[in-house]
Image 1 (cartoon, rainbow, N blue to C red):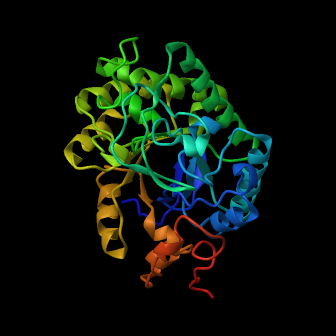
Image 2 (image 1 turned 120 degrees about the vertical axis):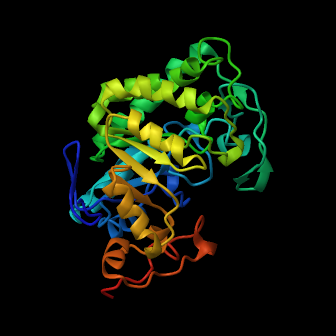
Length: 353
């Protein structure tokens, strides 16, 4: 039986184990929304993960969700990501970056213009801005003629990721952001061939994935989904049909992996696993060592190839070794999750310290 702590080959990437660090928003980008030397240190500290999926990164200025999140659409940002890639690789790690267009999950106070979305449907809830929490505002519906431009932004960001030396990209089609907005009946009321049926709702995501795969190679492109998720005010009906249509369109591409963020319907997710022809990463809300048995069982029975952990990596840069040895975990300082410098970011103690 495969072991979580044994190496795994992911489309040519030699991973040291099957544990994946989830993308975690930390709001510490520097001037020009570029990753800093501190970010390089943060990710390098966590290079013992089999694979790091770096935080949600906007492919354009209009795609930014929150203050001080990194971008990948300028030369300065590309240089910042090169610094991160070099630091992780120097520690023997592998790292891809998540490309995340916020769509309607943003605000004019953040991006200087109305957010865009598939349709002019306002999500419930609020978003953090430099001026404090603000209600979401009604987004502007993207014109059909604008969609190729958004695809091109993803392609440019992916090419920049390769230029920076990163090992690939993950397309964020989950958690209520732009790509999932196209999939979701509660956010997409289009009648132009990009909405109205499961196949049409899946069309834009498939077009983005196809274009990015053609630009940098399908074996450098993963995708994250969260079927039936409700984060950021997203709501979906016809879930089974929509995601079946999505996978029908993605399977022929031969992507690097499918990253499934577990929701409430685990039986449906197992059906997706059966439909998907490539590698799978499951993210099931791992809370600590007590969940190792569940993770190992999921690998043993073929439910997943890799297991994704988020919160555990926040306070434990050496999480893999702690889990392997049964050591106690550091507690997360929740007051520093989305602000500040090194405190609560790169100053957590190591076992070897």
